[in-house]
Amino acid sequence: MDTRYLIEMLLKRDKVDSFSRYPYVLPAVRSLERLEFHPKVTFLVGENGSGKSTLMEALAVALGFNPEGGTRNFNFGTRASHSELHRALRVSRGVRRARDGFFLRAESFFNLATEIEHLDAEPAPAPPVIDAYGGRSLHEQSHGESFLALLMNRFGGKGLYLLDEPEAALSPQRQLAMLARIHDLVKDDSQFVIATHSPILMAYPDAWIYQCGPEGFTLTAYDDTEHVQVSRGFLANPARTLRTLLGEEG
Image 1 (tube, rainbow, N blue to C red):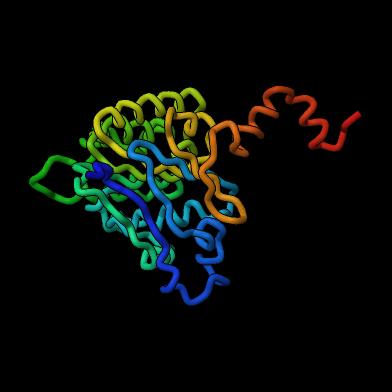
Image 2: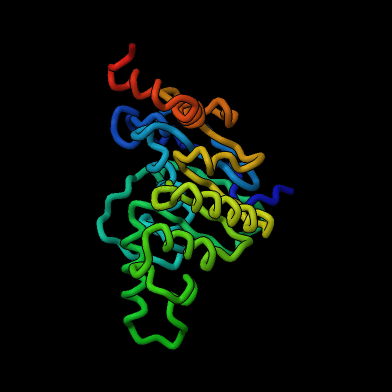
């Protein structure tokens, strides 16, 4: 019996009329056949424009999440900009259902925070929504603080969490704190799918890392990812790298 909440996603290629138009022309989509998810943590990494965030969005929508982020109970929308890709995905789930779930999308987190304030401005018999996020307005914190407030307070364990570039607002030290929180949630029977550029986050032990290149996703060892190799090369000798980059070699 497969105990994963999320097992795999497949592209129903017979439902795609053309791979020369968006979003099917993107490398992450064009070569997609079957992508299996790790029981704990799966990373999607790749260059800007590779399509990993578009694929994350489509996966979230296929699972019932709001395209701009939040839980399945959020249904706000500031602009209908998500693609049709979710209609061409087949998502396989395990026999168990997650008790909790969240889609964190860095680029639209401001909209999520605003929606929470709008909801709490309306009279309701239930406690304020913001109480589940630490009790303090997400707009009254720095971007990084609000991200951590979400992870520390709203993510309750036994959940399926989709995170799109969560490192966008986090310092290296805060990314380490996020790693520790992810580990706590994994130990509490949670599963993560994370699109990231962060070598710190993708160092999570035993995770699967899918690197997206021109030919699509490839399961890649941590040390072999472009993100890690470029970062290590720069940090090993910043001066030499800058001389080469800026055309001042020699």
